Length: 183
Image 1 (cartoon, rainbow, N blue to C red):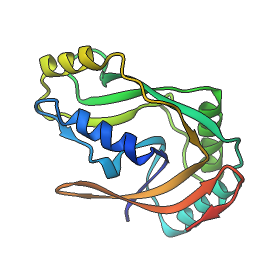
Image 2: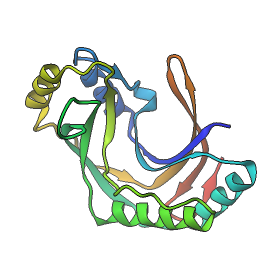
Image 3: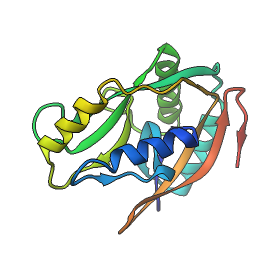
């Protein structure tokens, strides 16, 4: 069974720019432009009955359209050798409220609550053998990175299948801010 996650998609021109930026870091295993997104909640592998319950619960969420801006870069873990390179967000209260609504819907579907605090970011690259110097140069160069805001008017339930070339994501359902679902 594929793994599931809930995310906000990023406009194509921004995805292309982010993928190109990440490719400049030595030793980075970059996320391809097609796979760049903002994860709101990773779910993992589930059975078909739970899948149906998740789709139904997420369809009950309505939320106001809101702006989102990408700003700044960093890495995880914040101390020690970098494993993940990310771009940050100017996230307002609307994003946090949407994420909390999704979390509540998943709990109603039988998915255990997330133990980690929501830390909104967009993963650009991962490292097997991190180069702290290369990451430090990248962060110094793009510390002031900023993109114009874009409107969030939907979120997506994705499935993800791991392959030797990386994860392949497929849209399972798209949920609009008006509370309608498609796919």
